[in-house]
Each structure stands twice: as structure tokens, then as C-alpha cells.
Image (cartoon, rainbow, N blue to C red; front, top):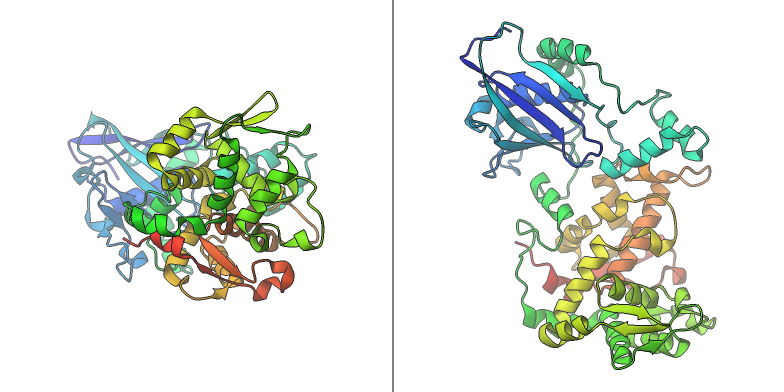
Length: 469
């Protein structure tokens, strides 16, 4: 197609968060529809048209394929009926294009320049392409970086698995074929006609009642996602049930012991056993250390809830270690005195979600994606957590919604990626939520009953913290 309008747009499409950057610079006509822009981005970036997509303008308007929104859950406008110039009219304006709501590939689409329309070369055209886009279903940016590490060194045990996953193909992140991109752009209508004649390319993912925009907001900031949960808490209601959280009961005992000169640590830098036992007693032995009836406690390192409480206090900036003593910072004392334990809990909660390395919880490599997708469990609990339900039901919902999660598992001859994902979701996510007081399990410890028969439900504390918007 030759240029027919008076101007043309120079746009830049950048994969958000990618380091080193991955981007394309394109020339398009202003009256290009968003449906055509979707196709242009797919071909220019190197995606495979295998997942859902949408555009989001700065004013919040959503545009997409109406066939992907049959139940009107997203309330998108028809992308085939809206021109790019209606949302990008001034240089510097930006909108967002998201592809694959599971992996969450977000792109900034920036109108860099409005150029005079005196060019006779066919449009659209890619004039600059920097680095290859990630493989499909690699698990978002964390999975992509893991994949690149595995592909860098043929001596690594992960190399063979990564190469096999790619179908034996080599992946060079720097390689881009600009000529091929432009050939595909000129043939895009024929190419997409082929997609339409094949089996449907869009693999719809079951989001369990949440729309992709809400999902993105929830995963990005689970404690401030107003389209999903109300941002303002009923402080009185939360305070009434705050002490039901094991971590609060243990923290209160620890903070009380820290007042004054602090706690003298052992030669290994651990809490003295007397303090550990006091925290177990406060948290509830059945929850914190049910094996206490069978074996003696030798160190806080053997009692996850206790050491987790101490670690979170330190990460949140409440404590410090100095000259063999664990001390409560003066700023923490002041904050507790002025704001109370609800603010303390919110600080600990936020720290647990964003700063704690969850792989530390079970001391296993891999499955980094669990920490990113874990907030979706809050939605599941708000949907059906009022009744006792099998733990396995929640794990199955997580894996059905995020089918790429097992891809970040460590290569193993004996344990499948799905099994590793299930274990990591249980040992990291659910264990943390239990210590934070958001769920209760029956029985409390899976050792007492087969894991697939264990049930769980949300707590009163969860219900006051996560009120549906």
C-alpha cells in the first residue's frame, strides 16, 4: 500500500521492562486501525499471534478484538473501527499494548514524530529493530532471563532442557532480520487470512472471573488494586481480628523482648532458644512447630514461622543487628507507638510480597514465577474461600490460569515441572499466607494427612483486608 494521506506517523514500540531494551521503530499511516496496528506489532516484534491482546489508552479506554471479549467482561471497543490518530494525535503521546495476559508482555507505543507524507515507499515499514523478542510462553521477563542464562552456557544442566524446549533451535537475543520483518508487514493481510483459516490462534485462558485489566493491577500491586479490592480498610474491623495472625502474635513477643537493650544472640547469630520457645508458644504450637512433640528445637532455623518473623522485621526496617545483639530501631518504636500494629502488619505484609525472596522459604531453586502470580490467590479466596475446599483445587486453579508456570522449574528426571510448581505454590505461597493469618488449613500440617485431602479456607482477617470493589 502506498502513502495516501498528508502525514505519516513514526512510532516506537518498546517491550516494557526488558533489559537490554527490545524495541521497533515503525512508519505507519495515521488512519491505520488498531486492528491493523495489532497485526503490525505482532509481525514487527516477532510474536506468534497465539494469545489474547488489548490496547489501553492513557484515559483508560480499552480497545481489542470483540471476538476475544464475547461476554463483554473487558468492555473493549472494537479495534477494527478506531484509527490510531484518534488516540495518538500529538508527538510524545503514549498508549499501552498488552499481549498474552499470562506472560504479561506489555509494550509502550509512542508517537515519536509526525512526518510529512512525501515518501513513496510502501507502508507500514520498520526502520529500526533492536533485539529479538522473547519466545512465546517463556514465563514473562523472569522466565525469559532464566532462559537466556540457560542458553548461554552449554555446560549448564539447564542448557539441554532449554534447547529441547526451543525445538532444538538456537536463540540469539541480538538477532533481528529487518528485511524479513518488512516483507511480512507487506504480506500481513494474507498472513492473517491464513491464521483465520487455521484453528483459532487465540488460546483463551480461564481467569476465574477476573478480567485481564484487573489481573494486571492485582499482580502489580496486590495491596493497592482499587478495581479488584477496596483500597480503604475498616481499621476497627481489622484490629479486632489482627491477633489471629500467627506472625502478629510472634512479633509482639519478639518486640516486647527487644525493648530496652535488645536480645543477645547466640554465637551463630540466632535467637536464644528461650526466645524461640516463647514465640512458638505465642504463635500456637500446632501451627508454628507441630513436630515439637516429636523432636527438640535446636535453633530458630528449624522453625520457619519464627525465623520468617525475624527476617521480615529486619527487611521492613524494624530491627537491626549490632555487636551481637538484635535491636529494635527507634524509628520502629516511634512508628508502632503512633500508628499501631495494623500499620506494622501492613508493612510486614508488603515486605513479604515485594522484598522477601520466596525461594528462601523452601530453600529450593527455580519456580521464581510463583512469587509474581501468587496475588491471584487473593482473588480465588475472595471468590470461594468462605467454605472449606481442597488445597489441590486452589493449586489447580493457579496452574490453569498460569500454564507457563512449570516452565521455570529446575530440570529433573524424576519430578515434572507441574509437580514442582504445585509444591512451590504450596510450600511458599500457602505457607506464607498461613503465617500471615490469611488462610487456615485442615489439618494444619499436611504430614498428618495426605496432601491431596487437605482443605483450606480464608480467615476473618483476610475478609477485612480484602473487600471486593
